[in-house]
Amino acid sequence: MLEIQNIKYSYTKDYQALKGVSLKVEKGEMVALLGKNGAGKSTFFLHLNGIYEPDEGKVFIDGEELKYDKKSLLKFRQKVGIVFQNPDDQIFAPTVEEDIAFGPLNLKLPMEEVQKRVTESLARVGMSGFEKKAPHHLSGGQKKRVAIAGILAMQPEIMVLDEPTAGLDPQGVRALSKLLKELNEEGITIIISTHEVNLVPNYAKKVFVMVDGLLIAEGTPKEIFAQPEILDQANLEVPIVTELFQSLEKEGFDMNNDYPLTIDEAKEKFLELLNKN
Amino acid sequence: MKFDMDYIAHNNELTETNPYFKLFLTIILLIVTLALDNLYFDVFIFILFSIIILGVAKISLRSYLKFLTIPMAFLVITCLFLIFFFGNGEVIYETGIFSIVVTDDSWHYGLYTFFRVLGCFPLLGFLALTTPISKIFHCLDTLKVPKILTEIGLLMCNTIFIFLNEIDTMQKAQKTRMGYNSYMNSMRCLADLISNIFLRSLDKSETLQHSLDARSYNGELPVYVPPKEE
Image: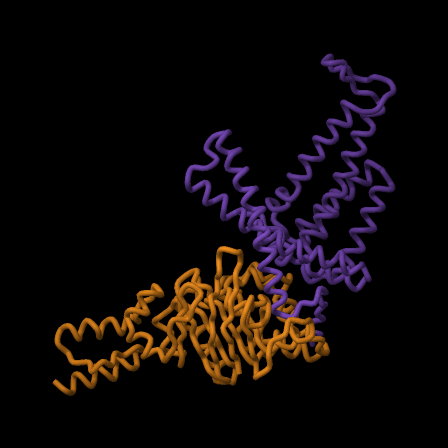
């Protein structure tokens, strides 16, 4: 589906932001990219639909190599939608509906189709009724939803979100995770960069860890969160639930090297431990 | 209370009135006011449109006064200059300083300019305070105003709102750390603010370009026609 082969990118002569990143995401997957601030996650994302052209390396989408001429870029940008970290960078039109229509209109779709997509995407993110509102009068969470709707309206196969939960309140974070999970179940491949380790195991089947322009690990959340040295390099922590079980182990409970990552897993584990005693 | 013109434009009794009607009414009356050059007519327009803005559109008096203050300050300064430093003809008042005098010619100019502009304020206010900017752009588009103008206007409008927010945030940050507490300090803070906003604007413009590109921008902003409401 999406394959990246050894891409390198430098901003200046002395500063190489990406030092050879390769990764593969299968169709219908939902993966998370973890890494500290400044690890190169945002730079990496801008390569996925050809906004940045790598100094070296290749990007393949559906087995097709990404070319940097106008026509192929148009095709690939429709397939891969990027939701920017700061919605203010993305939303520019004076009303919500005009902003969402921007992508589909650039694809030269007929007006009825565009209108249909605007209504659908707004409904999909739970923002129906905000069509005529000015984006700068919306709250942070609402802007984020509008930004996502703007990408949804282009009906991408892959959706890339750069720290989508940054700056949202706890319920906003939860609602957004739920929305993304639903979108994924509807068939959109989703790639997220994030610091919210507590939520990652809930949605991501696969996790990549990026440090200083290199991917240093990939695997299931279970595998990644079981390697303290990797988490340490990436300035990450284990989910708070896992931390609880790690400290329980120190009290003498046997965990068999299987630490729960989510609330549900923790519940099972607790019941198991209680029944055993 | 903060004066947010855009918010007012979106939330008043005349927001949903036909924008073409408002646009044409404003333009025609502006031309008539300027062409007639009649003191009574200027005052009449001023009073009439003030009543429309306050009474019909139901915009609060405070917001309206705030809207008037800044251009009013410029107007007063301009007219003072006109009265004291321009024109020739019969001297009607001598100030006694540097032989600055008021002539009947300059008095006439100053007075008429003042009232003409005074009449135009509420007219512009009527359009600016009751019509969301997007609707004005939409009108201009259908009236075949060159796309390049409306597009630049649209992007400018967007950036201005982002900048106003940025300036507001930066100013708060400076004030929190004792900025603007003396004259010299104010000057320095303002200099920092201006240079920083310039750098940020470069940065922002690049990010905006990226985000537009990500949605297949091809150099032309398309126009969206919303579905007709049943």
